[in-house]
Image (tube, rainbow, N blue to C red; front, side):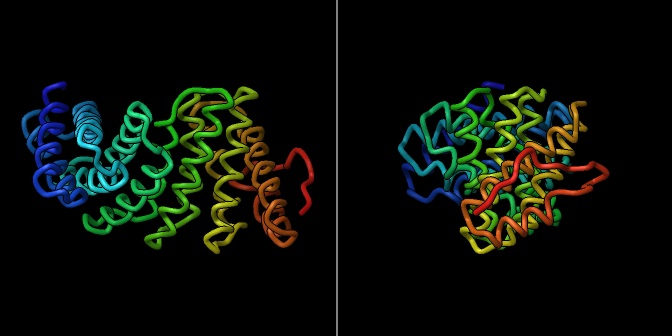
Length: 293
């Protein structure tokens, strides 16, 4: 409802202008606005999805209007949506995914930094999940899938943006002690949910995304093998969801992970080769080419 978008936007504008504080102000605005909207319409299915996306739109539009920090606003929005959803008994993971998807797409629309927003969205998902009793790994995967889907589009530019967003997701998870594997898995699922096909370009995006999460994991000192395997698992899950060849999707992800590992170290290549190929989730995974450091 446009009325909800405008209400949230105007509230955010007033609060930021009045106090300058963003995260807590957005958290409270998002939580109360969502709870109020859903109490009158019910908290399941379409009503929940529409309400959380409207809240997300209002948050980004309002913050952008006053030149506020979109990343901080995003973090507050995700935490607030989780709190508001819990208050009315809604499905938290669906709410997180839909919220982050809209936050990323709105940020792109206003010319903001989508990678930074993805990073803060991940932090918000992890912190918010802990406060409402949702499993952190599930919230991480939901946020990651939503963020990648929020990029939308196909082609080289979209692939590059997805890779940057995926990197932000790993960084955000690392910042607050979240599970990097869940972030990687969700990111790859998000690619396929967004494209709904397995074209040559989608395969390239899967490879680039897997490569991005592996490099980001190496940068934060994480387990590159575990992240690579999780990325392949995400490709398989996403492929099965949309009904395309899981082995082909997995091969693209494994190839991208190995290529990235080759830019890190010989040890990283060995770790990724061992973890991300072979039989995974019932699928024989074969990388399309060898990669060496």
